[in-house]
Length: 283
Image (cartoon, rainbow, N blue to C red):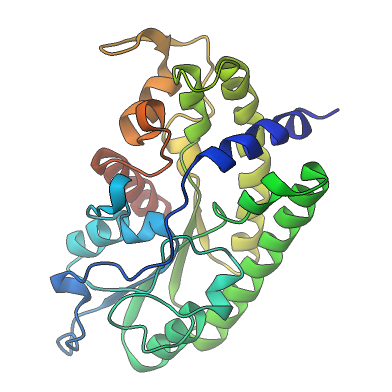
């Protein structure tokens, strides 16, 4: 049986224990206000899930990678992302944020593209799609179908965005391999095996996701790779909290809340790292 198949039941059990934030409206920031940008100011359009909104444990928010990127480039951020969004939600559920106006993320995005000077779109999606498979009668079959659905939904989203703005820069991205944190998280007695298997799982998922972006001339930021997720687990480092552990595990403990809180969301350092990865992918 492929290693990807072996990891799925463990991942679904993990998903059932990890709280998914409910869809909500991100707290407005000065650069995501409803005021129109100056005539010469470019726009960064952000769509996706809680990684884009900056959701953090206990319902708090932090400066998201999208906000960091927009600030660095002196762009106005229009952030339509919603906590808990799936790939299907992009076209079917109302967007969040002060610029949503009741439309779906996709409809609000295409409207923005037709009426504003958008120079960059970032899209992060897919992390919430697999959660329902935890309760499915056949989790593996559910996951196989769900990954295919994610690819279809991403392709549909990119097609609409390209029709509205054929030349705009689009950067899709993936996630840090948070499951590496199971290596040190006491909630998972088989954590080291889960961490080992997650490497192959993320490689499979990311390659399929990247293929969709490439078909539409979009860039892809493999955040898993840039945050050390594919590193050899025999490469060790001394961590101040956990002692000698794999370097890739230490990185994910610093960049996400997973190791000590079993929360998949990025820390402020994580959002900085994601912003760096997205910026590098867009060059």
